[in-house]
Amino acid sequence: MKDQISAPVSAISRHRIGIDGEGITTLVVFHSCPLRCRWCLNPQTWREGSTFRMMTPQQLMVSVQMDDIYFQATGGGVTFGGGEPALRSRFIEEFRRIAPKQWKINIETSINVPVEHIERLIQVTDEFVIDIKDMDPAIYEEYTGQTNEKVIANLRFLAENGVADRCLIRVPMIPEYNSENDRQNSITALKALGFNRFDVFEYKKDINK
Ligand code: SF4
Image (cartoon, rainbow, N blue to C red; front, side, top):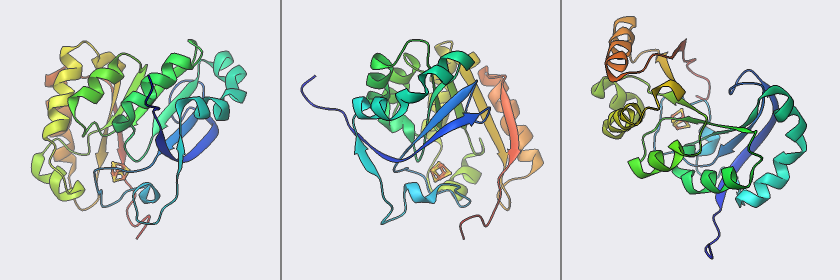
């Protein structure tokens, strides 16, 4: 416990209702992401020169605890987003340890991370909101610049460990990259893995270009 855990935080957004999980939530946005999605909504989390603050879980607790009463009254809590929050699994694990037990801990992730992070997060996360982009490896790579091998392996890991019910899978229509048919194929593949909760939506293009 000598080595202090810290992580780069780009932003903290309070009093969010029904956007990032049950009840009133505070969104904590971590800096950095291994993907480069064409229509990224949060390029400020990975663009060169973007700003962030290194924080420990204890410092984050000081920043968010004023909303304890809202979290407890509404069944809300803290949602970790990014960037890629799953890479900060040790930070989130420690935050869970020091946070009030009634707070929900949610994570919005691409799960394109080594499986040991997912293994750790299973223990401390109430809800995984997973954006799979598209299950087709070629579409995924073209859109993000990375392969989806880890995504598929981590989906299997989550399902095999009985966590599918805690996962909301986001299946987007990606302008210029996939079709309704591709999206249906993704949903079919996800159902075959054991997932049944989907958020079907459409990315907006040109948001940061
Ligand atoms: S995973 Fe999210 S933060 Fe990362 S590049 Fe894609 S849209 Fe942006």
